[in-house]
Image 1 (spheres, rainbow, N blue to C red):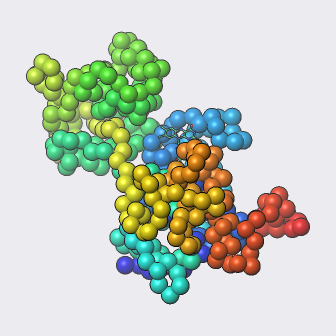
Image 2 (cartoon, rainbow, N blue to C red; image 1 turned 120 degrees about the vertical axis):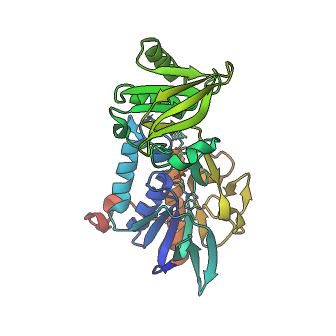
Image 3 (tube, rainbow, N blue to C red; image 1 turned 180 degrees about the vertical axis):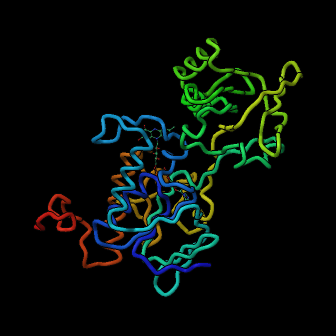
Length: 339
Ligand SMILES: Cc1cc2nc3c(=O)[nH]c(=O)nc-3n(C[C@H](O)[C@H](O)[C@H](O)COP(=O)(O)OP(=O)(O)OC[C@H]3O[C@@H](n4cnc5c(N)ncnc54)[C@H](O)[C@@H]3O)c2cc1C
């Protein structure tokens, strides 16, 4: 177990809220770190919809989710604070007057904690068929972040929701072939995207197979080379050549250990006060994981809550530092003249 030096604030979650919290900590001249279970920063934006446009982030008439994450990471990273990725926080204790957050491999002492854990640590829902298990990371891709990875390849997408149709649409002009497979003919995706993929299928640019499910995966020289599909109605099977299978079955999320820390939690959300306090002194929360009367689960809301949580934490750790940060436009830390 690697034990790190104490920091002022440990931020659980590197989604938009956690990233903005990290920026604010740096601006307030306190030390911070992000710990996130996912391999990349960005939370839901990176894991669920990197290629979607977002229209309701202040200052950007529209911005791709992945570009917003890049900008947030640049803003957060300017003070040199670190992020620890692929590390799920599983424990919290208090020792020698500070908190200690632990993952399976590392331990992070911290004077204060900001929980920006969104909908909890989430992982893609796996295919129910055991035949897929040996192929995860070797042809079966649970998370897609860069559609270019699939240029010129034969792709099978399994699922009937937004992610399945969004990626089918994204890959139409990149992949050598796109086959979308779904267990029924009812789709849970945006109607416009469904229509575009259906039109592509009608024009021979894609294949849409309803009432089919995965039956087996075939390999050549230990490389995934195709899949066998079962027609649920006709009870027949068919084989399709493929280089990659993308199961798009949604995500399962889990608050996990966070629900055992004595915080005020209702329906997997942390009830916070207007100062983002969680019911346990020194632990604050912000973003999708919080609830209060009038709460909106939006990126914009998370930004405001991150600013409140961090400024409260700063004052809690260092009572002589004010809660009110002042205006960044006057700050010496940005090379401006301090008031
Ligand atoms: C398809 C889709 C489209 C959307 N479009 C918009 C939009 O247009 N505008 C808008 O405002 N909002 C939109 N949203 C909602 C928006 O994405 C969320 O409000 C936002 O992501 C919340 O940010 P967050 O940082 O609070 O949480 P998240 O983005 O969920 O990030 C939380 C992070 O915490 C990590 N984490 C959780 N528990 C642990 C743990 N125990 N240890 C380590 N890490 C942990 C997770 O791995 C995750 O990375 C959309 C959501 C979806 C699914």
